[in-house]
Image (cartoon, rainbow, N blue to C red):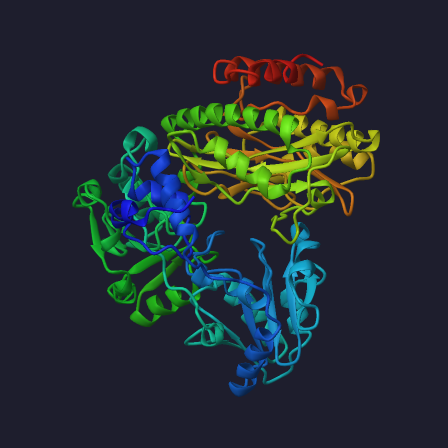
Length: 639
């Protein structure tokens, strides 16, 4: 129905924002915390009509960039999917890789030479990347075959100049490229401006969204206490200050949340934390909501975002610590030029942020209980009504169900709903051009998550729509066995995620199968759904520690046929066995018993699954009503 814009004006005035590039539900909730669900629906309907940046594929863009390279006598230009803050979710202005190539994945790297171009992606995107890009202007390659850095080193010659944007390139990344190109006689050149910006007509500006305090009842520790604690770590390194450019670190440290970034409640800003615990926050103060200044207190000095370069110069002659894997080359160059001494080390807030406190864990468990009930209602809806509907309708229904929660603040990432063969695309993104309808005899893979004021969720369920062939059910069961193996793992303190990753793959390996992505990633609390430093993957050596929240998500994907992924979130906990750790599963939602080949499970695996389903029923049965209740009872019955 048409929106009454006159009636909408008072609410829009409170939003104080322009829509491009925003996490609409997140910033709307922040700006209008007392708005009703109906209010938000009206606002969303009105803003849906406002033009947003389009990233349609255009084969003319790469040749236009190549013309600039020739003019500037650059042999190549590096195009990472990155911004000044090195986060997963970028504001629209920073989506240069997608605008240039058409590739919409969350990780990718392009190299543009004067006469050719290549896009490097990992195993999640080997199907998606070729479908989204134009083969006439760019080649898609696996990021390890060979690595991008080796590929370009084999292309350049002595005297060549390779350009990069130091504002979006980490220190270590620039060093690696400089070393590799130097061996070939080529030079890495920091450019004053990004040449893509020169050809991007209509490039959006920075977002503008409200900033709110994250209450102590959800954060569990006051910002001043965090700053004092982290300041001690800075001093222990022999530094006078630390420069933070990762937005989740800043949000966690100051106990603030915003809406500048899609899917994650972050604020575009930079922060310098002194060893005495005093912080200087470079941010647009016009975004502040009432009470935020008082929340920050005297221990935080607020300065304009534009003053960041000046703020770095003020540390002349002093030791400053930066994390070379995330702090950009531009930050390091400014500090060095000012005469500061650089001390390389990890972002001092990353590990404390990953070790969730008691309040954060309690809130996250509550969020998962409510989310589990929403998922149960959704899965029952899938059983009743999804056949014949498209993936976009499935995604919309899930958001509708979750949105009824008063603490809900939007999706924690764009839902992956892959019907049939689309489920085999690991990080598939449905669109009107790609969506399939849900059909009987196939799997429907739904990977989704939500942001709540008290926690962040991430869950994947693969649903057997009608009766699926036994071969598919066997694959499902092998993945489930891997999931159970991780969930029940016990391991010595000091163990890294690399040691746990094989647990998830053993049953698949025995069948000659595997999956080309990590088994688990860290998760924040009303922050990033992907959080460091720990992971469960073939690469992660970071020791797992109590309080860390991780995902447990093995999978299997057969191109052109089906995809399976089964994901819960788990918390690292102390084991009853001294010196050992184990996992507590905090996601509760039925696995599809119709997809399980029971005789492939061991007795211990069946016992775990029955116990998990019993706890799921006990936790959720009071949260579901009507026909959802007997459905949940059936789906959580013992095998």
